[in-house]
Length: 183
Ligand code: HEC
Image 1 (cartoon, rainbow, N blue to C red):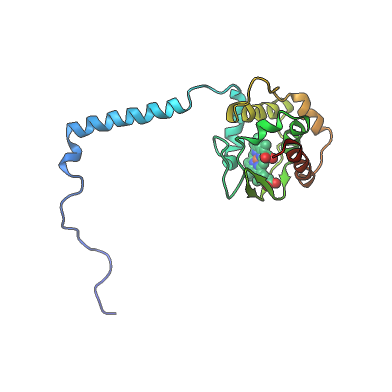
Image 2 (cartoon, protein in one colour):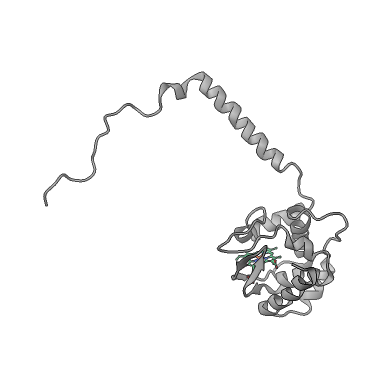
């Protein structure tokens, strides 16, 4: 084997980090900029959630696929930022939301003209009130539905728990809801 051994190259240039970067003026600028960034982030999300328990359930169980603000993930799960509030305004749409959590859902769907084709797990390990609250977090906190929308009740979840079906049937019911809502 001929040639120079790899690795071991020595760097003889100036040390990195020019003195300007360590000047007090630069540090003051850095502190001020960080404060502005922090204030901007806080201003973007000024209000605490209306459904804090739902937020906790969502962040622990749903955000892994749907993301913390429900914006979805193109390779994993659809956004939940607009459709759930629209479903909540319609009796079959409300049923659809409860069905999705009780049975899961699979098969290709479209949300805002984008396709998704993965599997939503079922969440029957949670009680009716917990599932109603996580849906209300989505509807009112993530989607910002107005006061004219009625919150999902534990009874509406219980009604679907009493009639379990499979994820393909949930997917088929979704088509009817979208047609009724003109989505
Ligand atoms: C493993 C990833 C994953 C997790 C975790 C998950 N979801 Fe989903 N969710 C999906 C997928 C994938 C779909 C779309 C299924 C399809 O393509 O048929 C979906 C669909 C939905 C829908 C229906 C959206 C529509 O437009 O019809 C709702 C509502 C929903 N999820 C809520 C939740 C909630 C609430 C949780 C937590 C309790 C949760 N999801 C956890 C992957 C996930």
